[in-house]
Image 1: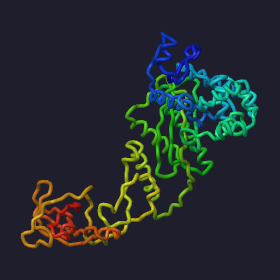
Image 2: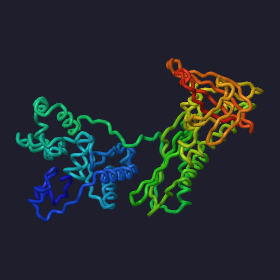
Image 3: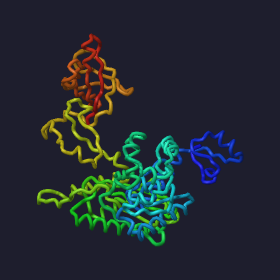
Image 4: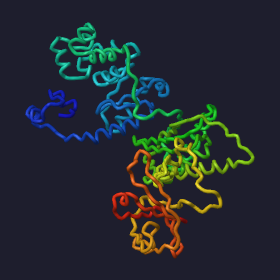
Length: 469
């Protein structure tokens, strides 16, 4: 048995009981298969919806949620009003819910499961929990049965025993959990989502459904968030938007920026780009009753000193274009190349997201002067492709003609060889002899001869690596 309702528990059934035994005790037992994956997804959805009350939300087992409401209860009329509001709204969605408020996580959990609706004032957890059964301690059932056999029926009776006695019988972990339950100390809550640096939100007395109302709300929120950022001298790198629907559905989207920005017009334009590019358009359903903007990553932003001979506006326009493309197509699709410390052609550059700044310090080495012909092709194949080469006259030089992709190319001119060896730690690795060749049709290719086969006394293989413009 994975879970039971109250009527089943009243009949003496319990979790973990074999199904055959339960059906023998209650003949007309209604049994449904457990779907743990769907239950976990549903709990995550409820946790997303609870973000409207506090950003400190964590899952507690398979059927519980923990909300740290420190500093947030006054926004909802106090702890009692907030407790009733949370329970009422979740129950209105068709869920059976029990909730409680306490100063520590184990105390809140115990009160919610065995004294729902109770509020324990800070430092009063021990008094609130005194009459609860030892099952409220949680943990292993064997510990609960051992406590009951010892005549300890309530938490008050367990708390009255010596800690050394309890530690010797049940271990230090049980004693630590008991101390947290009684409110002596607590562990910090680990929220499901990273906490934003700054937030701006707007709640609506009546849910909004029209696009114009949503756009007006986003415009006002970006203005508010930008004002706070300007006061603190910060700029955004990650902007997250959350849309809370009245029926409990939460829709989230995120926009990343390549440089710290607090201009509300830019932020609003990027949000519009993200909304327009959604494969599943934003559905207001019965309306949004809360819209929130989070500054996921805020950094120091200083006004740049612009000189007369530097086109700072063009640079910012480029950044803005990259941000717009990334918002519409995804940051993993807008890439740039950064140099790598290697002379192997296919490894000389690595693609990274264009908005990522951790790879932006390296400078490209100039390979030729302004009047020199290109030494490297502008286009390199993703992987060198093998060709069939023929050498009627000079087998050690470039081929007279070769076949590539079912086409025959006759070589009219060639330059080389240029030998490129492998990395120094691969002393026995093969070297490559590169040639720049031009065909009779005017096409220019970059070929190389693999030296591995020559070292083994075999005919070398030839590959086409790139194409000149």
